[in-house]
Image (cartoon, rainbow, N blue to C red; front, top):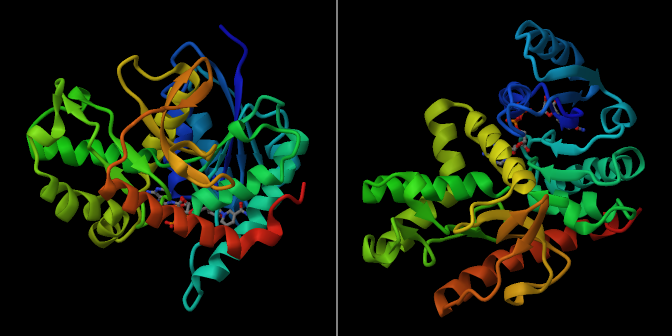
Length: 328
Ligand code: NDP
């Protein structure tokens, strides 16, 4: 057996954390030959619940799970960790304005960036799930000056998977036959799910579905899918979000298929004319634990308009929290 990888989950007693921890420990993220150590971090009020998660993990007697650390201390939770999955975030409370939510979470993610910088493995990979995820990732990254920006990402994989699901459903095909979906921009209602590059069994998607269907039905449905699930379940999506975390880290570490790419929110490097200094969802391929932004895709006038809208939203989010950037 290999040396165990250490994975930290923040907000580990929450809905997504609860759905995620068991899947990591059973081998879904790194494969069935890779042991793991789970370092589960919570706020003090949630420690009793976290103890219960720890007991259940122990009761599963999972052969790949070498150790479980439960803590409310980031210095312990992030110690020498290889993967930091940042889920815990302050939810919007009644009467809270969007800017208040951004600022409240900015403080949390600035502190976590500093702690990761100080305590995690030098090669740590960070995935931010807690919303507003893209801007939270930017804050964490800018508060971790000893780490490379490419070690930080935010999750757009659930939106990517939702796009595959919608397209498979509409065309009566299998998700495994669909390639090259893209989520551009922010994990918010301004995101741009783009199927202009998609193929289904090698056939361009737009030979099987109309552009009007994509614009009038698919795009708005994916943009608002979170709300649709809350309406149906009375709770926000948790299992599908945890599954997307598994996919995101799995592909980042173990690589993407040769004829496909995935969507990851990563620090913009100016590709496709997007401003640098924001964390933007882009198509990427992964090899040997590194991602590369897919280059050279054609951006038509419709796509450019959509890219601009979501870019502007991220720039305005950054303006709200700018005082918390680069504090490392
Ligand atoms: P969830 O586990 O359901 O959600 C956690 C975060 O993930 C939220 O920011 C949520 O955003 C986001 N999220 C939810 N669904 C999706 C999705 N489909 N795609 C992407 N992101 C998504 O929340 P819980 O309240 O159950 O758990 C949160 C835990 O975090 C609690 O146990 C709490 O104790 C802890 N916490 C930790 C903090 C810290 O580390 N300092 C601060 C606050 C809480 P959205 O709100 O938009 O749904």
